[in-house]
Length: 597
Image (cartoon, rainbow, N blue to C red; front, side, top):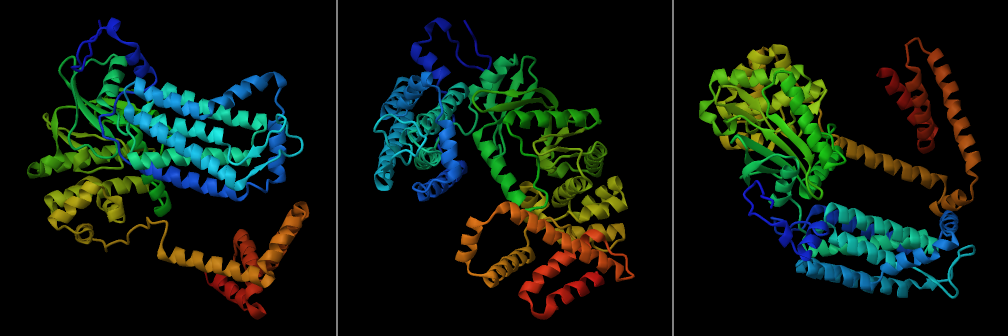
């Protein structure tokens, strides 16, 4: 007899039916969240549709490299012929029926419907593409059974990946890995048996992936957040006995948070990372990378790495004397989920204790920030929601989700700016600035003001500032006046600015004009196809080397000290401008500006 420690009903192992065993080993537990459409499915659909269009456009014109690769993959031992044929045989409509039947056996009718639609739709579209683009005889050197023809796309490969991708959100980790392994083997088998060229196989993969993503977008997919059952099983595997396990109210999009009690009745805080959290972090990281110089916290390859880094940051903070939660465990939990278990002291978040923020408490808050700065730890989300007022009067730092160890001065100053804005919205600019100046000093406070801008702040701080009518410009002015310094210029955070966009547009226009003067585009393309690239590389090296000689003469002709590397680049820029400007006017302008700088 096994008893679940989180309040789950007692179960007897002898009563577990084969249906339950099948469900627990192949299909994961039912998600507590309703199915929903996810940005990752839309991104997968766009990417797969792009590759499908590209491979379809070149389905009748294989390159020499593709043909050589196809011949190489086709050289399989004769003894493996039966095995490869059997693997390819699985990529048929009866595989769809088998997978859909699995859904009925495990009482997941939604899974059966999605698999049936995905498989049948992939087969219909695939056969339509084969009929439109036609079949062809295999190229010379490809071994294929007598009378066999190659076709675009490889429908059997498309069916294999469509079934696996459509079922993936429902499956356990082991079943998913088994499915993706089957897709990889089926793709290699198609190449080895000669039923399709690499382009045909990639087209099949793109078709199946697009079909699965489209079905997920239409019907939604489950398993975005870790379920209560998954977290409960993980805690049991880690030998962490809990009671009263429940979801916390008001958890954000970055993670799934739960509360529980350990065997001694002490409070546990549990943070779980599932597929939704991974998607949110990936999209946030991509957005910040495109738009900002600092792309934010490191994006880890696995969720287990994420919770391990978060635990590591908390341990470093505690070692440096910063009041932080006690790390109980950081581990994987169920299919695609990772959990971090913390033991936090009893207390109230400072965001809920606005009327109790005395000057003494503010000094304790800033003392925590100073300790983090000494340890070179940037919290990344330091506002009043991440600070806990303990019952013993201490201020505890929580939520190290976005923490950075060995942080730069800019990251540490941004952390202080976040807290200055958060406290300014809570107690007003004057008291917030006075507390920050007491802790940081005048010089550091002035450096922090450069990062007191909206992109640095957390969502909670921006909302609090807006609700209380406190503007960042007012906060900067009060802080600069208290430090006896003019208001410093804000730090440059955005990577993309209107000026850089305009420069890129002008650059591409210049390249367009340059190629237009060299000749029409069709003749340039024809010459590139027949060019001997070895001689082109040699010519480029020798042409670039002439700029070194020009740079040496330029340095020797002036009394100013000129950096040699930049002078070489100057000569290359002059060669470019001479093509599009008459009488070396562009070169003269560049040289004049270079000497002025």
